[in-house]
Amino acid sequence: MAHVRKLIRDNVETTLTGLATTGANVYQTRVYPLAENKLPGIAIFTKTEDTEYGTINPPRTQIRTLVVAVEIYVKAITNFDDTLDAISVEVEEALYTDRTRGGYAKDTRITSFDADFSGDGDQPVARATLDVEVEYVTLENDMETAA
Image (cartoon, rainbow, N blue to C red; front, side):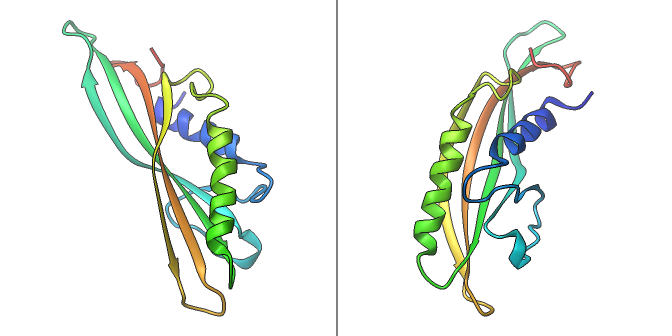
């Protein structure tokens, strides 16, 4: 079995694979392979996680707030903002079809959007990052089972 954090990240990857614009170009990595044939594409990775304790007596309940970064990459000369927004719509709608991330989470919320681009190379590469907060619960002695 795996940490619930990984199971949630796997669920996000599965949920976002097959979207109309990005297709199968979805990767769990912090370093996105920017090859031309992999764009537009999505990179998914764990950004942060905070833990609060919900009970006093051991084993204590941990209420965890995981932030999964969903980075969207597009390569174009014009209209990259429009393309980023179109993919963002697909991502957001897909993520909200199951806020429980396959039963591993209590809630999913998209909390921020940030866009940037690099003009290096023959075509600019634009990137948008969606921060996706996923709240889930475990026991302090069992990180492999959602409580």
